[in-house]
Image (tube, rainbow, N blue to C red; front, side, top):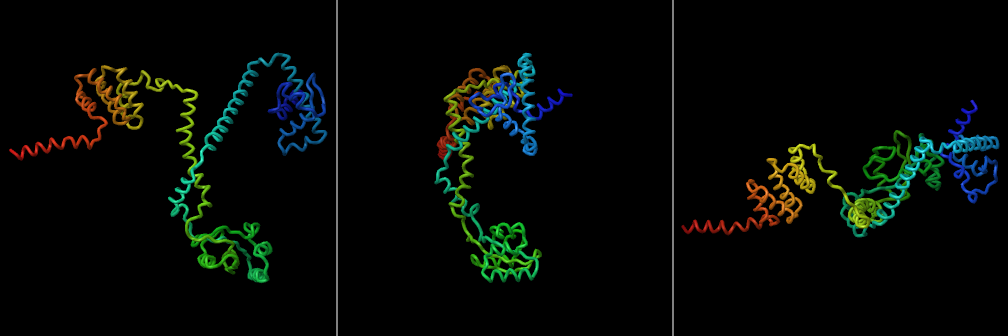
Length: 414
């Protein structure tokens, strides 16, 4: 039973604190508080007791902050040190479970370090490095001045609510006596959500529902007809009797640029940060450290049937032409005698020409078709592509016009 109690104490109080003699001492220079006990060569100090206290949840800590509680913590530390010393004396540091747990902890530490490094680098070298040009912010504002940043007329309103006519009379008397609206709110308003903020309802847009009150056309009309600091009311609603005052106004039109500048910057920055990261940071780091990718590892394996491989290449021509070329090349390498091999050779050249505009490689692919598959129906097409690829379609059309005109002229002469 004594052993069970010891281990229970260890599990409750030593989670995250158990360690070796060095971890508890923290070095002779680091801990100069008075020594409370020694276990072998290990010194248990008052600072160590305080560290144990800090690891106890706040709702349980008070019971350990008394002299008796601290003595109990000291006993647990002594028990833990005795067990650690004996475990190390038995050579249990080499036990497979201990080694595995230490390795796992080291991996977690390494992972946490990597995450912190990545976050810090991205924030400092990518996010903070991107500055949105002022002209871009202004251009975005001007582009959206009539939609996103357009605002209807608004008034900032505070109110007082009382539930009886007598209360309304008392409010009116206080206001007429010159008491400030905020002081009257504090003295009389029965609306708890706004009473603590001087009756503030926030900004109200014309012809829109009012906070807490909903649609109130008569009140809205009166508010937008009043001036700043005017008192409006009383009005009776289902909630009681209301008095209002206008604390600020905004005219209809575009919100001021400086008011929305930060929000525009926050809108534009993610896209610019991503572009800077992809187009500048990654290429720079790639050049600095070098990157090689084994592209063959991502090609279809030998088990893929020829028809499936050919169809996959066709499907990729528009969405990923680089991969399509590699698939066609792989198809020809694996199945040079397949009935679609000559078509694959032509489509490789077509993809290089029409989707990648790499006319030099395309000409080579078309020439291989002519050389390796001279009986193919695609030879004529390949020869035409070699002569004409890259030429604008309108140019090809114009060149045929004189011939057509000559034919027409010749026909007319006959």
